[in-house]
Structure formats: structure tokens, C-alpha cells
Image 1: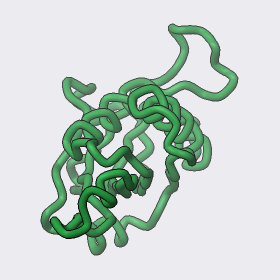
Image 2: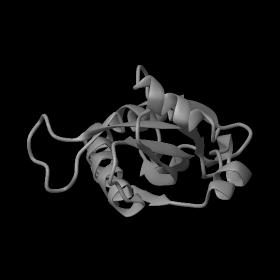
Image 3: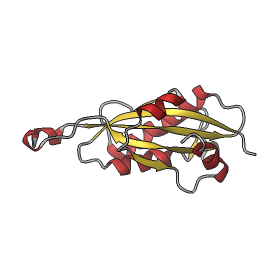
Image 4: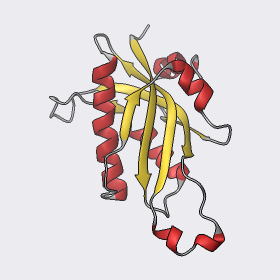
Length: 156
């Protein structure tokens, strides 16, 4: 049996107005595949992880009469879900710090400077269940370690 720490997670960030929600979700899920501690600086270091959740827009849609002014504004996206980190000895604080760095780098690499780093923090399990919109899009890390997938899916 694989040791795994499961952390309920909330991610929010601004995105350029032309951003696709599904692409943002895929970026988050694939970024979480291998996480590294802040002190790890070698390509082979790190630990496997699995992210499953749902992405959604937190802002209101731009109405036709608001265009083109609204088309220049950033969009506000969110993700509620669960992160499973493999291996013993992890703390929620360390895992959240590791995924925060990874997501920050990935969002900046994909979308450029949007003015502020993504907010990534642990939340209560109950909040994931109660606050995820029905219309949100499901995401998860593809081809992840089966034991991590199984451990996480029990929470979904």
C-alpha cells in the first residue's frame, strides 16, 4: 500500500480574457504530477502526486454590451479539489507550499505575468464538497500512479 497524504485544495488566479477553462484545468492537473520541495534543485528529486477536482470561472461573464471594454479585463478562475502526495513524512503545509510553487511557475510560464501569483491553499474537505459549482469542469492528472488515483477518488 502506498503512503499518501490527501489535501483538500483551493486554487484561484487571474487569467487573460481569451483563456480556456479546460486548458487551465489541464495545466493545474499536469503540473501536480511531480512535486519538488523548495530545497530540491535536481531534476530527479521530488515525489509523485495526483490532483483531482473541478475548475470554474469565479467572475461574471462579459455581456455583449460590455464588449470590447470587458475583453481586456482578466478573468478570475478557481479550482476546488484534492491533492494526493505520495510517500511518508509529508505535512500539509509542505505539500501545499510545493504545489503553490509549481502552479505559480506553470501559470506564469503559460499565461505570462497576470499581476499576482495564484493563490493556492488547503481548505476543509467539507468546503470542497459544498462550494464546488455544479457547472464546474472535472480535471485530474492523467496516467498518474494508480494507488494515488484510488486514494483520491474516495474523496470525490
